[in-house]
Length: 234
Image (tube, rainbow, N blue to C red):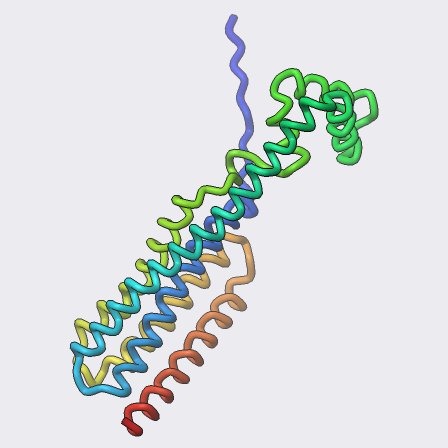
């Protein structure tokens, strides 16, 4: 008789925090920075083409900036991770008994009895000592490993997906309506993203929506004021 093992998989919100934060942050940044740029330029100019060029330039520059910044940041994290793993390799080679005791002590601090912790440490060390120490001592795993290229593309894509909305609105509405339509559309979209992020992360929706909408509206109003001031002085 064949025995089938069924494993119960639980999904927790904390598992989605990393990618969710990056995606929502990138899209919010794309919407807010590009919309603010567009309404500011529209308040200081008299030509839709100028506003579109500014918006498109903001989209491209912002996406590339996000990608470059994320790549540098995550590359630094990856370098630190590799350095820690290389150091752990040396320690395992030079002091295997000490590393075994260290691993057992980690499991004891997590609640296992002394003998059980020692046995778990022995079995995991026999299976893959480096993986056990990377996971349980350093807190590293395949799921959390730094991936610079992936992070750069994801950041650029999330920024561009948000920035394309105010640019598209600018291309579709009459010039004199660009500031108000872009502002309203962007604030509503920011609220939608805030609600999505809060719901996925199991956080209070109302507070998240109010925070992102009010801050976004304030940023765009300030940019409109600056655009009008500069447009008048020029």
